[in-house]
Each structure stands twice: as C-alpha cells, then as structure tokens.
Amino acid sequence: MWARRAHRARRCRNLHVASAKHNANAVAAVSIEEAAHGDVQQASTRTSSPVAVLEAPEEKPFEDAEVPAAADDEPTKEEEQPQCEEAPSMTPQQAAGAVQEDFMSSLGSIFRAMASFAVMKRMSGSARGSCFQSVQAPKVDISTYLLRIQQYFKCSDECFVLCLAYIDRLARSTEVQVTNLTCHRLVLASCVVAAKFQDDEFVSNEFYARVGGIDVQEMNHLEAEFLKLLDYRLYVSPQEYNLYLQTVCGVVKV
Image 1: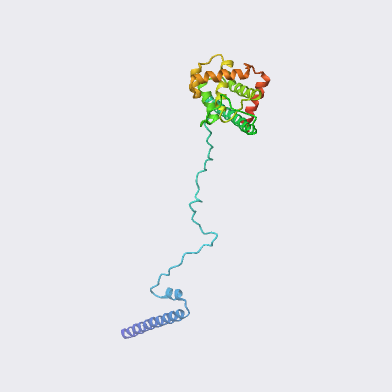
Image 2 (image 1 turned 45 degrees about the vertical axis):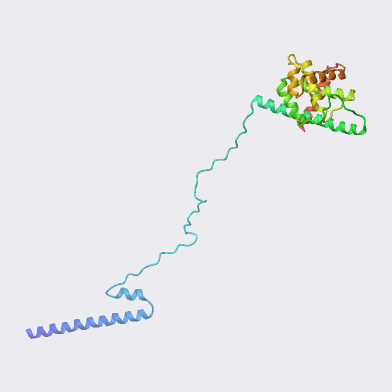
C-alpha cells in the first residue's frame, strides 16, 4: 500500500515537472515567434516579468492646438481715447493786444505800399523831398514804429485811422509823398495831431518826441508844418472814416 502511494506520488511529481517544462518551452517559442513578427508588446505581456511600455502623448489636431497669445494679443483694458488739449484761452487784454498788433501791421503795410508808389513817382521826376525826410532810412520797421507809438502814446484806436486819413489827404493835396525816408516822421506828426484833436487827454510834445526818437524842437516844427500843409483841416466825416477803417480791416483779413 505504501509502495503504491509512493509510486503514485513519484508519478504525479514527474507529470508536474514535465508540464512545467512544456509550458516554459511553449512560452519561449511563442515569445521568439512574436518577436520575429515585431509584436514586442504582446510577447512581453505573456512573460513572467512584464515590461512597462511608454506611450507617446496623444497628438491634437492643429486646429485644436492651443496657441500661446502674443504680447500684442493679450487682453488689455479698453484704451481711453486721447483727449485733445484745449488751447489756453486768451484774456481780454491779450485778445485786444493781438487785434491791435494785427491792425498796426496792416496799417504799416499800407504805408509801405504808398512808399513804393512814391518811389515810382520820384523816378519820373514828379516828387521832391520835404522837412519830413530823413537823411537815411530808419532801421525800425514802420509797423514796429506804430506799435511803439500805440504802446506809449496811450491814445485811442480812432487816432490811427485819422493818422491814415491825414497822411493820405496830405499826399493828395501837396508835393509831400510817403517814402521810406519820410514815412516815420509823417506818422509821428500825424499821430500827435490826431491825439490832440480826437482825445480829451494828451501829453506834452516833449514826451511825444522821446517816444518818436527825435528832440522836442524838431517835434514842434514837424507838428506845425503838418498842420500848415493840411490847412488845419482835421475833421474827418463818418463816411470817410469808415472808408479808411475798412481799408485797414481789409488788409487784416487778407
């Protein structure tokens, strides 16, 4: 009985060993065959020591790929519209000064045009000099000279319109012409006469002479000569005044 059990045990053990060898050979054969066909993953899963296989990350289509935003595309706060800076407003004094400067510049342009016309007449021999003529042309421009008179005389604006009317009247009725040599003294004498005729308040000829750049004796002589040449006709009608005023204002607009 014990011999039979021992024989049966030996037989079972032999069968177990044979079965294990058979399974090992089968696995090895399958692994070699699958490796020959390139199926490494399937062969490795059947071995007793599996090898981890690294999987590549799934590729997304180009349309679905997230593109990093550029610096200019980054969302920013709504930009405020730049506001135009308003030009600084002028005070009434500055506005009045600008108007007066334009007026004097236009008045000076008229006198320069009259001087150019007088040059043509002098070339034809129909004009000659006078006591208002300087030895040489002053370096100060006539417009700047008018601004100086306006600044220091403190006379009314109407005096400069009368100044133009008197000089034009003088040039039409006498041989005295407006030239580069006579323009400054004619303007000075005409403004002095207009201020004394138009305004209620005026100063002495000594002050007027200092403003004009001459001595008081010459100032007195120029004023007297200017009145004689005008035959003391200083009144200007409203129609004539408006005509000269529109003439100057027309030059301002141009």
